[in-house]
Image 1 (tube, rainbow, N blue to C red):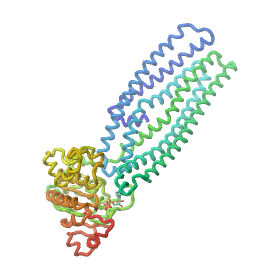
Image 2: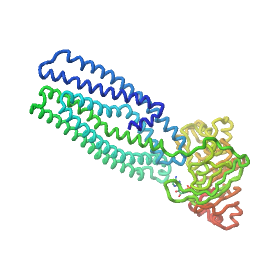
Image 3: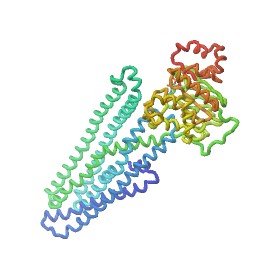
Image 4: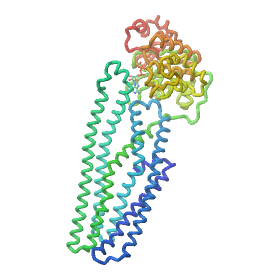
Length: 576
Ligand SMILES: Nc1ncnc2c1ncn2[C@@H]1O[C@H](COP(=O)(O)OP(=O)(O)OP(=O)(O)O)[C@@H](O)[C@H]1O
């Protein structure tokens, strides 16, 4: 755990943590020395030879131990604060360097658990858990060594039991850690299902399911309850093991001391004194047992944090690529094959396509044929397995994220709006835009028309994720952002096929406006919105099976034509 904490703290704060560790060792040693120094006092008390000078050393050591303890506590609290700030800093730094494909509901749930629960746990661990661990090793060790000088037999018995107690505490910690792992997995699932439940309220209520339970959430909660029960039993077993071994050690020390004194092997007065100190020998070890579970749980949190901090980043070139202006605003997929990481179903097989500058390309194909995947590869959410994706004539792997993103505007299905005003959400497309430019883009995308029924007009807050707006409205805001950004290349994955005539009119206008200045790739639901596209690509079975203009493809009588003729009945087709 100490090593993991040092890794998380990094160079900036590890010196502070090492100093706190030194103070913890000194405080534990001072306490052990103070306890051993009481032995001669007790002995002379029992054999009737007590003199006042015998109190000087214990008194001095008590004051020293108290002062050192205060210093150690202050250092530990400083480390705790440093761990908290450095964790947020490092997680934040890491998140911006992870490929966008890394973010899916499971990993987002993992990060939210880590930020809310994990960081608190780990920073508390640095202040409150490492200290009992060190206290549990150093103080009993000093007591055992001290006793060795007064009565070697009792000293040896203590030294034999210390590792046994240590092993018992490790076994107990390992059981509690396993129990925590089981519970953590189920808790993350409940978190994810709860978020999903909140987001799916519109759909659930639309289908009259608002009052009834939501089966996936109930299943997750029932699994979590089972995990809680399992957690309880396994943790209790761990605590019982440690409790039994400690009590055995305590009894064995008293029995051994009694036997040595009765057989005349040890001085009876000294033995009474040693037995009086036995409780102080056992107590720090028991504390380790009490904290063992929390220490193990903190280690689990540290491991989970390390998993995120060690997640593979997209390699970035040291230098931004030099662009060939003759290919500006161009997009090309060259013999691209792709399978999502962790799966074995190949989505794209040797796909080549080209988006000419300033043209509108529509990508169509059955549901699941990989249309969205094409846009994700262009934006480099994932790395291709084979082939290359070129944006502006340069391989995306040779461009920095900043360089690539400055050329792209993304309008995806899952539009995310920030819990801010409608105006600020549009302005996000280009924060430096003037109010006039923001309003012009909003007008073009049909956002201004929403103002009639929004309570506070431009100042209406849209709720976290934009939940106060409909899917179509969120998409209009997203398109307005894209218009405002005025990026050379626009990738537009339209949200729904159920667009009303008003929305359709805004979409058509927006497409026309976007393709006036930019290269546009659009995955649309309505043929009518893309019939004028410069190029239509038909994706099926991992390949581009047809390409051309609308009239040309209709004349060919292939897949596109059959879809066109049956489009009213067609299920599962989307157009781009
Ligand atoms: N992150 C992911 N991990 C694993 N598989 C994925 C992931 N995203 C999509 N897939 C799978 O890849 C395939 C292609 O998905 P994609 O979303 O690109 O299809 P699509 O043509 O856009 O579909 P639709 O029209 O329904 O949106 C699907 O089988 C989908 O289940």
